[in-house]
Image (tube, rainbow, N blue to C red):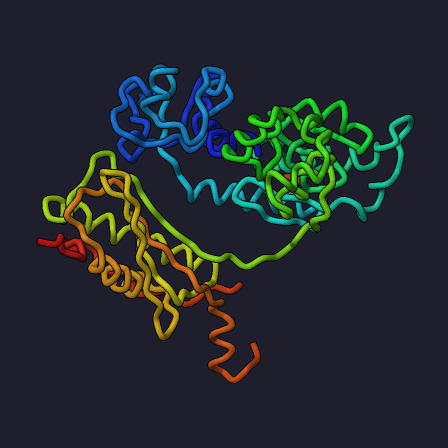
Length: 404
């Protein structure tokens, strides 16, 4: 999807269309209704804190503003940008709607997150047909139908890359944003893929990119030209072979229609550093809120968790994690908060905190657990448990004491 969160917000606030808008504010950045019926929007010019951008409209990106950038840095680049808080419930609703619209045309889908999927088009009727002088006309028409269906269902645009494999489709889907349809065949790789920077390959991060640059490799074509054995010598057998395959546009991964999540987590970065004693009430409320959100995520996905953990980042940027494995899996907020609180007691909390997170892993399907209790076996684009007990509404103490 194109600038997904921001695009959803533009449907809600159409007067912002064409303006630089960033998503990443707090509740206090909600638009304020005015007596004349208009709305007053917060801007980056007014922002103070250390939040980060979740996403930005293309108008904001023209100023160099991008996701994961600090809001204060973005304010220096584009102070006039409108700042909106994230509304993940609404984004999830639109995510379900766009995926359902795709499934009406092409039902074999690999879910890659809230705004991204892979679609298998190979065996769809007409996908292999030529239309007129266009040898790929059939599959192109299907892709266009998908785009049209998504727009009808959601009012949003999406960009699609149609290629022989997932690697190329990921790259192609980014080439003609927004509202793009890019079709690349194996014959197109030298002209369309090889001139691109190596970082356009999903999986080549900053460290690998810097190492390749030190070897004089800046583009995918330059990487493709390097012998496989040379890459293996520098990166090891597994990564070296993978780099060589990727650079030459080869990827054998299938579209996977189902996979189990490894963990679910919630975390927040504070706008000012908080102390376990001086800010007990604030930290306690935030801690409870994260546990309730995590419980809601588990309930919505139909899982229970055997291992509950915490993540803390202190004012010196040191990050600490602790976890505890339970005898029985849990999903209710009170149990999650209690277990996470026990983990907190194993941490020295004398320094101020800049980030707090709660994590659930060792996930078990709630329906499988119920079945066992009853004696039953258990392209690039279940059942929920019963209502749970909630954690205390307004706990006043942060679980855990600073060491002497």
